[in-house]
Image 1 (cartoon, rainbow, N blue to C red):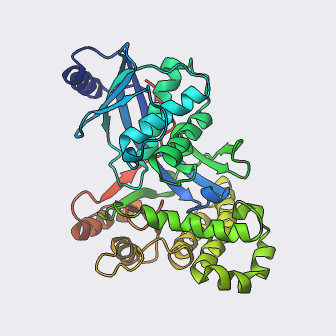
Image 2 (image 1 turned 30 degrees about the vertical axis):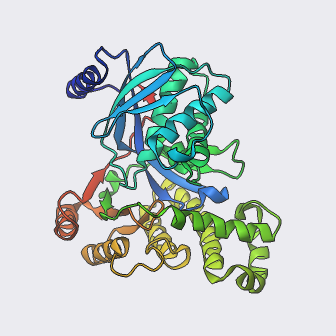
Length: 396
């Protein structure tokens, strides 16, 4: 891929203002959309995901110091000293934690990291549900890999570096889907049964050829204060897995799980059991949706997409934050989609849930009417029309 003249001018100007010199290299990493597999990755399940045509771009120059300086447009300068590559408690949930975590993992892998300056601009808005954090991790990882490590890491390995930074330094127990989709690019199905060697297979399908547009709807709800909601999902499922002496649900045959539901309800509560039911059904659904797309059967894909949405709402319960009554933005957006689509297309909660975005496939003949209806309630620009991007994290 290449930068447009306008993009390059903006990056060069921003870099010069921030660091007083000219950048040497340019990089890009895309946001991602989850097409199937809601909260299956952290249980070593299957997912279907795609990189999208919104990205983070960076102008970069090695600065000859032991300091990484990153300025993202609209944010303060972030400075990380490479003298300390251990988690810093005060940096949890910050950009500095992600930079330090990526650098630490590269050093552990034998890379001789050094300081660099980067000026970044992004069309992947924070909290958009398109995983701006994963795009950032993949971008910093791609810079580190190309500038300091001779490109030794593969794109999946860069994704694993990003997950490490987010889990260990940032403090969020995420799975690997977001980073993998951003790093690899295109539309891919990934099986995480062996987390060290995930099986990645491209899926070639053109949604536009089926007369539908892929839309991501910003519910205008904030992810702030929701880390515990996300952590509760993995915590509850870990409890159930531990009951069977296993790490994750993927290691437990579905029949054995169902046979122990009375005891599991007593020990872990009904919500944990329902969330496990979601995993088993959703994991099987991913394979069914991939098969449908590979056969060109878009109608079956849409039907299964709706099932996924119902399962996330009823069983996984990642639509409404615990105890929330006055603010139920994701639930309201789903209701709007149902009304506006009138039985056509499909829609579901997107990504981590509780806040962020809803995903919809909208028939092209009703796209403008749908977008106007969404924006009338949620505000101008709430409905984003996207396409799948072929490239993952790359040097431009």
